[in-house]
Length: 263
Image 1 (cartoon, rainbow, N blue to C red):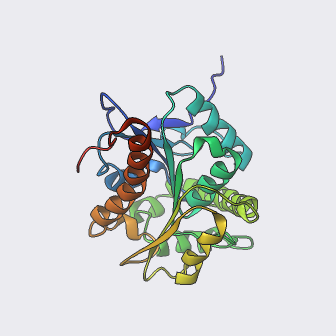
Image 2 (image 1 turned 90 degrees about the vertical axis):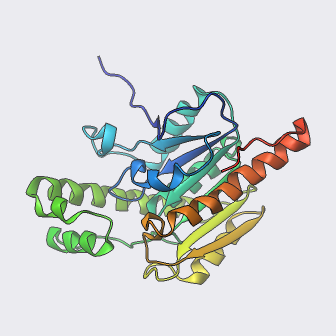
Image 3 (image 1 turned 45 degrees about the vertical axis):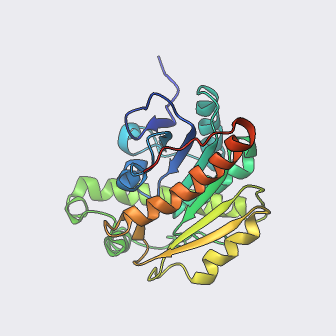
């Protein structure tokens, strides 16, 4: 008997009470647990949920046939099964495009978006059309986010190549889907000051994608600056300001209390 895939899973043990929620959308050829060291520094009152895409982590055996529509529908259906909370979205690189595509398609599920290592007008890493498997392997190695032991192993190398090709197509589709859309929620753009794929003006142009507040936060490092142990504390604090600051203001206006625990 086939069962529907689980699109969301917790990234840490649940607290007794949650007052806000963060959905973590993964970057290409990865899963949301890769961002766990940074997001788990957020207050325990923030529920952390990873977006589970096929072909990786707990959905490793699922076929790589995901569309943007599949992601939006799957995540929305999974949220419907959970208690309503102010929900924020975080995505890095490909994950940023998917997070914004979800926010634009389901604005009622989104209180704010953090896009990281991404630009709004095109897929971050460009198209892989015409690249051989050897060239893709070299490219993956140059990004610095994939362990060399995996690329040296024939089985894992082939899986990562196919996964990266699939995710690149998904990123291209999501990037097209968000080009003409506009949020009304706050948007935070995160970037590395030495990222070879993202220019500072790319981060600033995210402001055109929301009528709400927009901020840019730049950190030392390249494309995967948020995985650098030297940055995780600062990146988490910036996310905390987005999530807990907005949620606190909303709850204080209605309930006279602040929702987020001190760090």
